[in-house]
Image 1 (tube, rainbow, N blue to C red):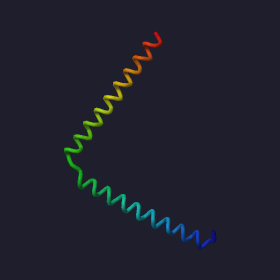
Image 2: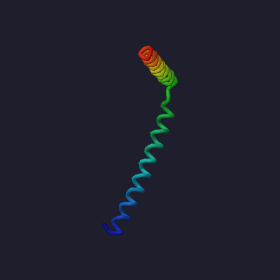
Image 3: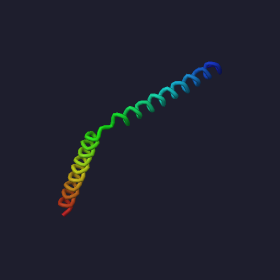
Length: 70
């Protein structure tokens, strides 16, 4: 690979990176504009359910381990 090819590839990668960053910023702006309060409540509820299940399963697992050790 020659030095010119490397420079061309490097400049191409820089342009691709700039485009990706611009697209990510556009998506971020769209997501902020389209944010819905009811969706936030649903997501928060799902997170609480998931963490609750995880805590319950962890407690059950710990209880099983303690019973097995007795």
